[in-house]
Length: 346
Ligand code: NAD
Ligand code: IPM
Ligand code: MN
Image 1: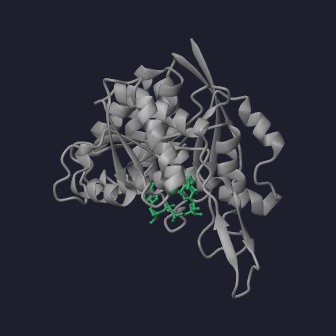
Image 2: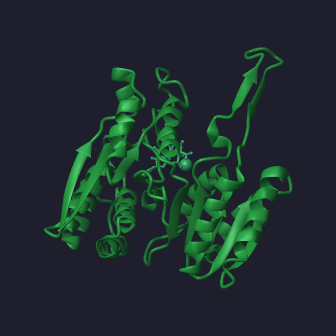
């Protein structure tokens, strides 16, 4: 009997709604062959309002003790002035990704059969984005001078280390060699010359270890054209933290919508638990109404199982999702989607 010990962080907005369905499906697929222990952590914008905690060292220490983390979403509504913009994102979510060294942010995009795409001719869409997860402009390595004056200067420095870039690029090549063996580096080395060239040189160097994988390069602006006009050209995209954030929302939009887009924040050295979450946020505009699609959260749970070596259980969820979404006729409530998928995997 395999035991897995998970932390569950439902978060804010639709986070708790979609996470409940992911947990439902996990319990169903675990059945009698996996002993599942779940510990729920209340964190996020609402929790900060109530307690002043974003993510304490004590909570972080507890989270470290689990095999993996299932996460919903955090974030305040845009008009909520009680919560400083970026506070929860930076002090909770990015702190988690950085502290637990989630250097691979894996975001698969697949257009399932029968799922409408906004593209007239989507073709086969089946690629993954390996988004570097611990560096880039996300490190908070910036500042402001003469704040509030007409001479204010604001900087956000993009941090890129040879170590950080290489481990993301090597992971992407490794994944490519197990897929259709094609890697595309997306960057902007015509403008971001220092970081861009580091990424490009790193791809060239690592490519030598993967002679079976072909690779090419696209500037991020052109890559966005191809994502819309010819998404089937992509197999594995590797890119930095900020480009990866933007690319994966468009990738979600062309492959069935943000409600289907799953992600994994992976510590591939397994020195800390990895974290699995939908690409979307807390969606304050639809929260509390049971209309959010929990599929992204459910597919993130499948990525979790695969990371823990439970491939067959993960595949069962993916299969059930594929059948469920290809036969969707009416909009169902959040819980009804979870019920259907849970029934199919048990
Ligand atoms: P969002 O992803 O929350 O919402 C964008 C749009 O997509 C909204 O119209 C929303 O209703 C829709 N949407 C999102 N998920 C959906 C689902 N499962 N089913 C149906 N529709 C869905 O992005 P946003 O509005 O830019 O951000 C809202 C808050 O979430 C912000 O505070 C932001 O910082 C935060 N955020 C958090 C995460 C995270 O926790 N990982 C990710 C992105 C944004
Ligand atoms: C995501 C989100 C986060 C990111 C924010 C909320 C910090 O947009 O997970 O895609 O930019 O990584
Ligand atoms: Mn994002």
